[in-house]
Amino acid sequence: MPPKLPPTTNASADDSAEHILRMRTTVFHHFRETVLQDAARAVSHSLFKSDEWVFRTKEHKQLAEKIAENLKENKTNAAEVLRRTYCVMREKAGSSRYIVKAADRDLPYRAIRVRYVGSIDPEIATDPGKRRSYPVVHFLTPLFDTSLRELRNPTWTFNTAHTIALQLSKTVALFPKHAPYLLKDFKLLMFARLFLMGDEIAASLETVGIEVGDNWHEYTRDEFLWTYCGDWEKIDCVERTYMATRDEIRWYVENDVDKDGNAILAASVDGSEGEDEDEDDVEGEKVTVTED
Image (cartoon, rainbow, N blue to C red; front, side, top):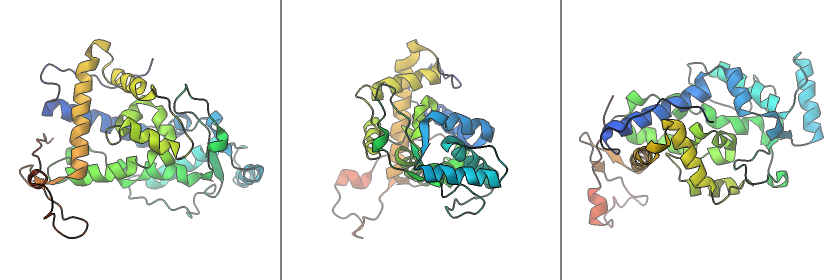
């Protein structure tokens, strides 16, 4: 049974600004607390399971063991290399604007190449031969993006919503290729699917040799909605709230707004200022956002 997020009630309209705010706040906060605020060592063991990681080659394994010996650390495996690197990065990040650099000498295992061989869909057998190997930092970089470390809902206003949503969407787009292990957690997947549709995630996973079945989208949706409310009788209500929250966020990814919440037409890529756009596109849509 998956652990529950703080429950929500739906006494009023499921797609009301109040419920959208509550869901966005809860899901954003939980992602940040889980990945970047909880005890680093505990998070690292939760994210990087020993049976889901292997070294690229025997030589990389031997090099990692040599590094561990020089650092007077216990003998290591591929998952432990990620855990140790993650913990160092957490310590370096602190409250500062830490920029991840692959050549950072404070990350002694940075050049060790590992391969993720876990399954996102438990119904689909893993084929390790389809997986590419990367330096450990490749799998960690998205977790330390500024957009995630600043997941504080009170900053979500007319003036900031577009910038926040756009930057978060760019970071979340990295998850399937760089941090697929996050998608195994229903609560973290709930966050990711506010920005990416299930089929978009599946298509991106496929490019790195990870498959999900046809039932994965529906199964995971039901599970993370149940995780959120803990009551199957409320699933339909909560799903409507979730879809409204997702639609609002995805709208803000595409649109900036003025002080009244009206969409601002951005200049087109070719600099034509959108003269050829349809009238409906020019006028845009007004979306109401409740500020904290």
